[in-house]
Amino acid sequence: MIEQFAENVDLGLSKSEKTLPSKYFYDKNGDELFIEIMNMPEYYLTRCEMEIFTTQTDELVDSFRADKNEYFELIELGAGDGSKTRKLLAALSDKGYQFDYLPVDISQNSLEQLQLSLQHHLPLVSVVPKHGDYFEMLGSVKDSHHPKIVLFLGSNIGNMTDTVASDFLYQLGANLSKNDKLLLGTDLIKSEDIVLPAYNDESGITHSFNINLLHRMNTELGANFDLDAFSHAPEYNEDEGIAKSYLLSNKEQSVKIAATGKTYHFRAGEKIHTEISRKYDDDVLAKILAKTDFSVNSKFTDQKNYFANYLLNRN
Ligand code: AVI
Image (cartoon, rainbow, N blue to C red):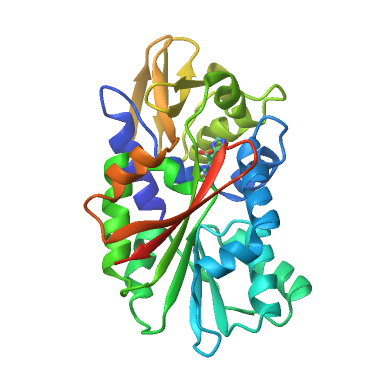
């Protein structure tokens, strides 16, 4: 795990345009900061998706076209704290569907919290947690032959480039069977005055979230990043509908990383690209789905039309 982290960091920091993979945001500290982000006034995404899950629960359940007499697996990729899914789990359980809930998450800590909270709130729902990253989990999805409904919520797909998203959905489709379903949560393309503050909040939580990546390298890879010598610098291109987060070097500096045995140089003002947060519309989704086995069945949006949950059918 540490070797892979070091390898990924070395690869990213050796490029002429430096990058770091966003999946390393999520250690214990990063998980906690992300929960704070979801509660920030500027971060509308979670509230909008929660509104959809709260006000259209029955419609979502109906869209799955599940058979009450046939057991199915409800798999959630990147489950996080599962608060939205709880609405769905409660409705499915109340309506008498037969299913197991399989939350998949890169964070062992989040999975444990989720399991405890579900045991408390929904003791009748059977929970089978899976620890790992989504890509690793794709193969294991295929091991069972029961019908599957996959949840990929929270705009998590937005943290992939379009090419990676398309490839990911292609592979997910290849591991599913005809008429399995995918519920995909996407943040919709909208103006900069709404999107940018969500990634640049007044209280500086997103700053801490981004800087935590450097802190993590200091503690886990023996790096000597001066955390005050970098700033959080998000950008949003409204035409493309893509937000990007950067860490900006406030001065010319060098950083040593013991785990890679190398020193990395940063120019004053040089940026490290740490995250992409892609926003969607029907056309963007259609292009991403073009080479996959999925087609759009229905679309659920919040009242402001900020966020959409697309129900996709595996053809
Ligand atoms: C997890 N993911 C969908 C979040 C997003 O909106 O891209 C991560 C995040 N990064 C900064 N704020 C939130």
